[in-house]
Figure 1 (spheres, helix red, strand yellow):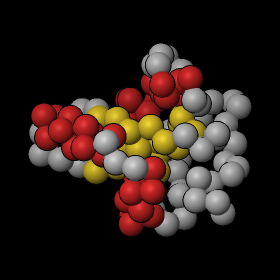
Figure 2: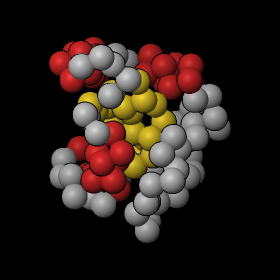
Figure 3: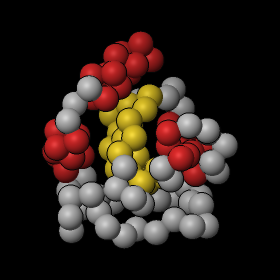
Length: 104
């Protein structure tokens, strides 16, 4: 799976995982250090299933090379309202859904 997380500061994080639900839980518990934790990226706004992990890693690399505008267009193509696609998973205490990155 390839996924994009949105942080409350408007930051977008692109990643790949073999078990998306487990990876989202890790991000939300802040057990995953690095970029997503630093920018508080927890809201799953895009996901794409691929045939293999190697295909997912290649797609992740491609998306990471895109402009922010192109990533936003990709997100809007499947999730125009910027809903949390993993809303049933636990969220950190300080998470809020304000200031969508598309300005709405």
